Image (cartoon, rainbow, N blue to C red; front, side, top):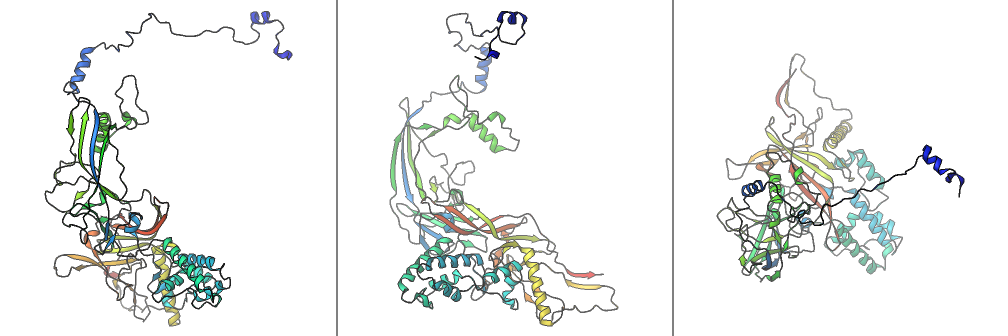
Length: 613
């Protein structure tokens, strides 16, 4: 042992206290005064009268002999959604293998702007995938496909290529891949167009390999259609309402129960988006079918939650929910109701579980509860009664469409909606705002997507487009346009109208046909006036598909918007890609639209009949 750990004269060290050390210790322990615990377990109350008065104040003396439920018998009827109809179109079979949001919200991916090719990122993605598929079959076919399906090369001298050439980043992106990469969208359109086209048409390297190339073409078409979910039938989007409208139905014993969603724009579907339309016996021809009947018999389970008051002595509640720390304001009715439920009625709720599949309608036809005293009670739905009764309150129940004292529907609708939806950045952003100074409504393109796939601000794209046309006028005239000179003797100048940025699309009021009082908004167009240019001014067209409704149709048509849809606060409409994963593991990607409240009125600066000094 080391010498530094040995004390030579321990007695002298202790007397002199020359080294620190612990030499005295003791233990604290309880010492009972009696050998019984009877009094400690009595939980005595010194002021019994105070306890009695508190019990009287809280109404505890007005109780009844209520027994705990011990047995529950429930009869349930379940039926599945079988039909789907989008915005008054044709009735289609309901497919619960597809999430409801992609089926309702799906919008066509914009691949062309008028006759101009856009969405370069998607075109390159498709071309790269096809080259990857066909190269193992015939490596020499890749350059031939690039030659036959090339990426469009924009010409800055052509006015039709202004959507690309007006923006340097978009123009450079097209020029970089114009002769080096393949346009996969052109091949997809060729394969899916009528006429029985084949991928090997015009490709010398695939001579004798037509059957193998057809199999690869089928894989390519399936891959492209799976990449982004495209609308195959009627679209549920109503441009004149800026919202989705659709209906689904479930068969009953004699007819069908029709659920309508005529004002959906939130981005997530649930029971509160639907109403029951009893005026329709079904979608198309009713197809009644008997529902699935299930009878449950079980012991009900008490509903619990974190922080629930414990009814047993010497037990403390879960501290993760501190009701004492809830400080509601005088107008926070929701918080007050939550606290009241948690502290007073928490142990009055019991649960009888039943698993229902998504895309079904469940109705409780009867419920009988037996308590410990053998008493049986017939339980009725709390939301029963008249649907329009203002004193009726219920959760997860669908309202009845229309007006009148109709009986409420107590069934539960479980739409096959996505649990979580991931949203990408907006590719189009349009703000509909009222301009009180100009006495009109504007559709402001706050954000657009360039033909290259890049997202830019609408004002920036509008300024670059105007500069392009000013340079085009200078090239056509051989010199910069010169505005007409002012009169020499004039002391003031008279300006008929001020200019407005090109990303502001006017929506002017028009009379509804057949009505002299009701008005609606119609898309109009401002002229691109370049001072000093003798050419006839062209109309400014919108750049977003949300405002180009009817322009690219054959023949072109107008776009009307109901005036009541644009409130004083305005509305913001965005279009973006969305992604979700369904219960089978498959990933769904679609292009959807969402509408939100705007930020108030706007001012375009448009003014007429102005005197300029």
